Image 1 (cartoon, helix red, strand yellow):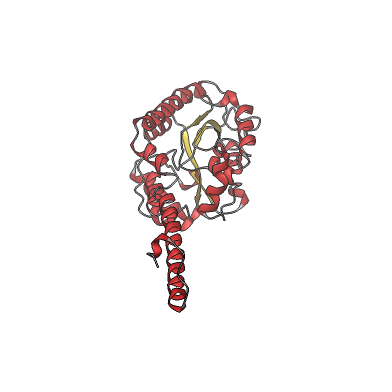
Image 2: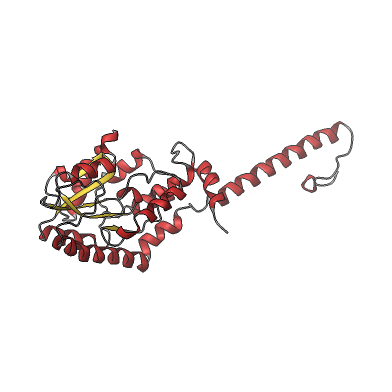
Length: 290
């Protein structure tokens, strides 16, 4: 019999049968190892690798953030001079006499969470509340470029800064420590609105409660959900929402770039967070446009 690596026909007889079985086992093992190598090659880089590297290393990302916050500072001054200016769709009548405030998101808007996303990549994993809570306890997220300058300017103008975040209520302590360590304005805990898992802490309802007490001058965030309800929908509906409020972008609404995570990504796999990573990729890849 020839070397079984060539997969040739095995000679008859008992000894030939043994060799045949050995060859079949070797073939099966070779195919299995080949499959493993394919999977390892496919997972040798995480799908978010380029996005996180762009946010962490590129001059273009820093420039985009600085540009957004410079625009926000200019628009804040315009809003203060116009008593009828409001950024919140939830703002009701008789708001002109209310004290001014800005509503701003936290993750990847004020606080740079790219190090958490880098940890996900290095572990070939995905987001989980447990992982994020462990990371948050360090309270070492740096500020997004331009964020502190804008927030300090708002506070100096007598504008209340209110943070609305999807972070869990359980992360209040580590979030507060992080904001304090960076010297960012947080007058009291009532100005840090987090998610306790109930419908009442959805961002649109949080904005409505703020708008009942303040004239909201600006909304600043990195996700469509930071500005308008209905963001948790399919990509076409999200684009329609964008167009319906086209006049607000760059004026009352200032958005920062975030290719790493957000409702834009979840919309591609139907917001089914129970899916494993491979299953998500299977749903997302066919949506690439050629």
